[in-house]
Image (cartoon, rainbow, N blue to C red; front, side):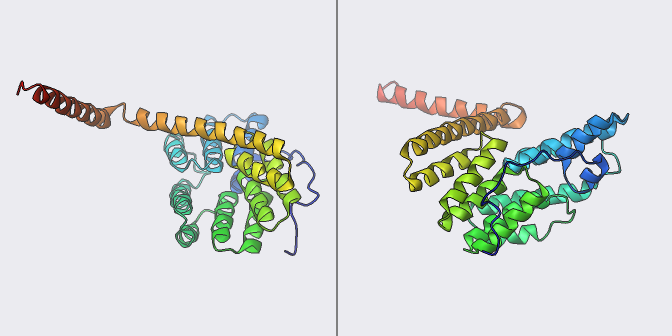
Length: 267
């Protein structure tokens, strides 16, 4: 590679607070929300919108595509300063792209990323683009995409983790460890970074640290699986879904009762 964004990386300096309008125009929603709060401006609709958009940004980083779309739909005060239709379109594209990557279909993911309109999701889009390029074994191009993502959003822990993955794939184990540790400083609950850090430590021969990181990754994955299962059950707890589930349970109970009575010669 022509450049190495990780080697010798120092801790990230605190980003200066931008003007909230500038941050919003660049899609730095969390920064915009914090800057707006510090500016102490009296615009409740803008405050409400920025809080919602900051939540959406955080959910995208966590690969929670459906939750991000749902949270976006809940923003009911929409000042004209925000390109709402473009954001709605782009969130749907990012969701489809992310799901394509989970199915290991990088070409479909790249096709969705090419449909983005707003230019407000550079960090997330470049992170997904880099992941697609890894699937195609284009490691140098992937690293460049992750570097662009980090340049736009130094807090994007998935981009940092993926940059570590490129380093690990190329045999630069120390650089990979540095990237994973930096990502975990931003989000210590990111299971993938803990898991990949365990792999890197094992390659270094540090088995104690490898086992510790692996156990941490497993606990986080179990917690996430439990939360996702609870969310799915929660979605069945109201309306038509609840009625459907209830009737399905009645049907199962009726079949079990029939089998029991039949086995005893009662019917």
